[in-house]
Every structure is written in C-alpha cells, then in structure tokens.
Amino acid sequence: MPSETILLVDDSQETQRLLGELILRPIGYNIIYAGNGRHGLEMTAKHNPDLIMLDNNMPQMSGLEMLKALHADGNDTPVIFMTVFGSEKVAVTAFRLGVRDYLNKPFTPKIARETINRALMASRLAREKELLSRNLIAAKTVRQTVTTLAHHINNHLMIINGGLTLLEESIQSRDKQFYESIKSVLQNSQNSSCHIEAVLHILQQIADIEPDTYHQEVKMLNIEQTLEKELDHFQTWSLSS
Image (tube, rainbow, N blue to C red):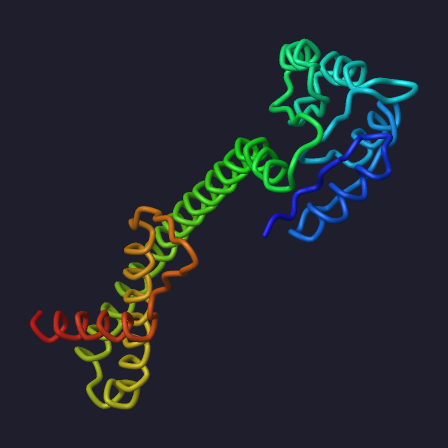
C-alpha cells in the first residue's frame, strides 16, 4: 500500500476533495494541499513531497509559474501537470520544464491512479536501489569487522594454546603428582580454547559468504548446531594428532 506524500496544488476545492480525499487518501497516499502556485512553493519547501499534482489556471501564481520557479531552484520533485482539453501547447511547455506526466481534465480515478504510479515509479526504484546499496555496505562492514576481530582473537588464542602446551609439558616432566592435581584445570582451559577456536572458524566462514538479497525472508545460521559440528571436527583432529 502506498505511503508517499502528494502535494495537490489546485484552487478548486471540489477537485481537492474528489482527487485527494475520495481517490488517493483511501489507497494510502498522504495528501497535502495548496490553493495556488505561491502557496504550493511554500508547501513544497516545508514538506518535501514525493509528488506534486499541479493545476495550471490558479490565482496569484499559475501552475506554469510555479513550475518555472521549481525548475530555477533545481527542485527535482516529480510533477504531474493538470490541464483542460485544448491546452496541449501549455503541456508541451510544462514538459520542457521537466514535468513527469500530465492529466487532461476531466479524468477518471483509474487514469489518475495509473498516471501517479508511473510518475512515482522512478523515485520508488531509486529508493529501493539506495536501500539495497546501504544494505550491501552494511554487510561488507560487518564482514570486515568480523574478519578483523577474528584475526586479533586468533593471535591471542595462539599464544594461549602455546602457553598451555608448554605449561603442561613442563609440569608433567617435573612433578607427576602436581600434574595430576591440576590436570582437570588444564583440560578445562584447553576445552575452552577449543570452543573459542571453533567460534572463530564459524565467524571466518560467515565473513567469507557473499551477500545475497532475500525477499520477505531472513536467512540465519543455526549457531548451536554449527558449533557442535565444529567441536566434533576439532575433537576428531585432536584425537588423530
């Protein structure tokens, strides 16, 4: 359901009610109004709408005059220009000023909805592309962070493993009785080290996965099951070495 904001610039309250309240708001669009071009410029600056529906014949400032002001200001908000039959020359001028589409009055609700969808399609695609780019950047940042942290932890883990091995060999060769008394402490430390190494291996695997796009689905890793497999692998390697 749409959630874009549409600025309807028209001096006709009947048109505002028909188009804004009876056609567009019920299907989810947020509607704001202006009764002339000058007010339309103020509302554009204040609300930054996703789309402007702009009538031409209005008091104080016409639609074309508002369009020229938007063009001069570099505002690229998509505009649908509304004219009466027989105003094709005005529509051509409006297109030269960058309007996205136009509607000939009177128009049906179906034509109005289709024209609005066409006008908003480009900005919708641009938002989707921007969101996808942000997600890809975030995924890349996470992978780089995981890789860096894993590298640092792995360096310290290597020192711990080396120290435990030297400690075990030293104690075992010098004092068998003392070794037996602290054997469980050493084994628990080695088991903890093995767990850390398994977690690091999982993190490194995750960091190597290329990002995928999922629609209405989140793919998550079963940490407990994966960790159990990694620990089995390390225990098998330990027994064989």
